[in-house]
Length: 364
Ligand code: F6R
Image 1 (tube, rainbow, N blue to C red):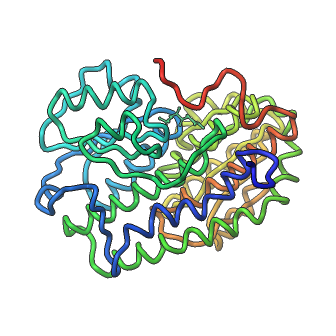
Image 2 (image 1 turned 90 degrees about the vertical axis):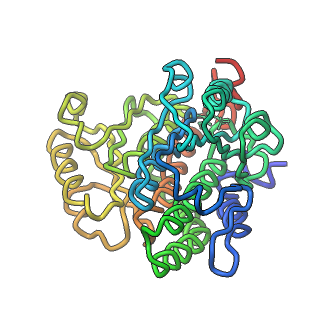
């Protein structure tokens, strides 16, 4: 049932191009985005004053990306919350806002409770859910499915990728309806989205190189992930993937925050993964890389093809193909997933069922 793959996680990583297609293609019709299940008129979309994105774990990291994407592209203010915090903080919500709950399983106790809290307060709710007919899918006012199919490995990969796509589609749609992007921009966004599956395939085909690199770090004690903007959101997910399946302590930091404390943890040889896909922030993050290197860090950079500047500062560079700045998460996460996977395999960990973790967290 693993289809010839050694682990479900590897199989599911390899399913990502298809997952992205399945989440994307049915919602693009004659060059426009059609999200029928949203059930919102253009007037309602124009009326959204604020979006709240609520989720746990990796789904929360999708939400952190969503904040940058909805705000940057559609100019709608976004608050992102961990469901376990949102549910107990008596959130301020009003009828002209939208609460988006993101969940693979659709059964996460805190996410479900957050959804109920939002509904009690009379605000519109939308679930981005993978499991058809799950509690969150049933209870949310509207549900947009991520067509990733069953995900078996505890560490999410393909559902995460599908959640990103669902969110991009909403952001482009909202931006278009609210007239903050041109028709030309919409067409360019759609073209870039449709290129993602092939680009993900290309990144997956690079697995031997990443396996080789990962094998050097199976004895690492600490790994840091840094980035700015969307690259910070990608770092959060890269760090979580590594710690959950390899048991190596890892942390993600907004690169600009390092010098406010964390940089004291850098020693000779500490691995730092720097995510550098936002062109307007290259210079800033590169100067952080220089600071890290001068304190002994070994810096792995994940960046866009063509960013030659970085080779002077980083020790090892992985390039991702060109896409729109809002969509780089879908590509940059692939080498980080592979890295975590191969560190876990190299250490002999139970990749698909890491200790102390459950696939679906139905108790708080
Ligand atoms: C990490 C992971 C978890 C889940 C989280 C939410 O790899 O899988 O962090 O993302 O438990 O689960 P769902 O999406 O089912 O609500």
